[in-house]
Length: 371
Ligand code: NDP
Image 1 (tube, rainbow, N blue to C red):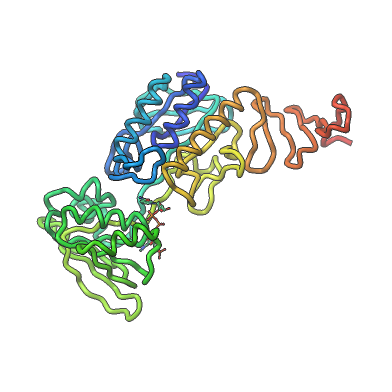
Image 2: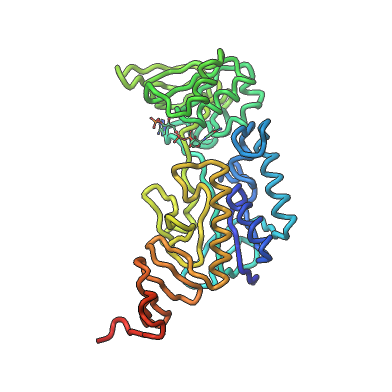
């Protein structure tokens, strides 16, 4: 058993920023991240490890490569004494503090505060042929990461398909043109969701063409050759065709990695953790969430890093016995005192209410739930 004041799960921009701040505050954080595993889509360092040019992270006027940026984050977290542990977390028990974190084949970790920065993973279409080999062509022509798989010999000078209409799809398509003969972006509508600059870049690229109002119904091929084509359906006139290609890159967005916390932490219908508007507190006092795992809107490296900083400050405040705002609007302290959402009363851990109005003498005490 290891006892910690701060445990951070996840090593993307959010987790590592939380580590930099809490380590610098002498809280000796332990950061747990999953080993690299293609099937589980885990990459220490997070999604930036599978990104090439990062042009919009402030401070790098010439841009920086994603893996280089994450190596810097990690070095900075190490410099202030963050301890790292690699392992699969099998279960997290948040029913009481200290929280219990069970690591497969490792020690159980007992944590006074927990910062969740587990990020998000690529979504799949759920169509025939997409599953991993041997059930489908996943790993043999089907991928959700152009940076990881695009340079493979099987895709060089071939025709490839990218599915999706967002920034990820534009980025994947643009990157793949380094290797492919031609890249077709198949999108279900006639308008892209991607930002203007990414759209323009793709439109200008002579190797990229768009197939609009079309869904990929099936990925076809043979075990020997891998992917040989996709069955496309035009969503306007219903026409279907087999479109020949050597690879399919699915780029339709991401889903938050929150399975470990199901039934314990409040989530929205997609699975994003719900946090307070003014802090990164979840519904369980002492558990904070930052980065893509709680952000379905901005999802940028810089916003993830910003919320990692917020989580660290929230955890520090909480450990310093100061009140932290909960999603309910109440504020709560580590001793279990609540300040009501309207800020008019403090409810002590044993259920007594103390008026919080400055006009009322501070030694006035009222019991709640009693006549
Ligand atoms: P988005 O949610 O923005 O886009 C997903 C795309 O996939 C949409 O075009 C959507 O279609 C399509 N799609 C979703 N589900 C399906 C489905 N079942 N079948 C077919 N198509 C589907 O996700 P992204 O990953 O592209 O981007 C997420 C965030 O990350 C954004 O904020 C983006 O700006 C950011 N990002 C920034 C980058 C950069 O700046 N370099 C690079 C990559 C991402 P529809 O449009 O019809 O809904």
